Length: 302
Image (cartoon, rainbow, N blue to C red):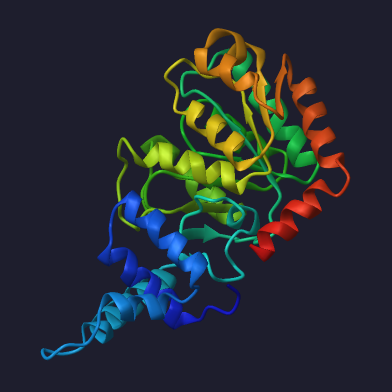
């Protein structure tokens, strides 16, 4: 859907305001995949009547919202434009709308490094070593800005001079956890912060699992360093399998959790015992004949 302009962007915002909720969002993405015009769909939803034309009012209100966000330094990215992350575009459950702060790289190639908020010293070392190695290879470190493994992954990538991207479960102008506010601002300066939630929206029970799916879609592969039985990270592991993306599980996750044992048996899921083994898998994935190029081409054409 190349060539979306400001009017299409505003129309998509208006549609999402009219139809809140995850189910209606998925339906909207499907409709726009089949008929790629948010303006046409908005006109269908808001036909003119004897009392006026609600279409014009909704479109103008949304246009002013987009203008205010962009003026505040928030990029508004729709699934129908070239700025939208190409790898995420390939995911069946991609968000129709993304908000971003920082440098948006549409053809970004990154690996998600995620795990528990309560992390052991071993897990912290593994996360740091993997993130550093990814940075040295020129791959973006993708994580969720949570405490624990996520924070270690982001900070290690920055210290190594690499690019890191945070996919968060609040609006891009909110900070959760609050103690990561300075880190979030640094990532927005040296990398990018992405959210599919409206600016100003706070954290909720559902927002973090949803963002895990988006993070999986953004990344070429997911590495799960450390996670418990009820960790939200399990959602990302399952989503990565659904997205057809490689998953790397540290052995503790694969042996000490029910979901880890289940995921470990799936195709293209790799169980490792060290950061070195994890990077060997990532290197092998990157070396698959034309694997990355094919994925990016499919995303760009999807």
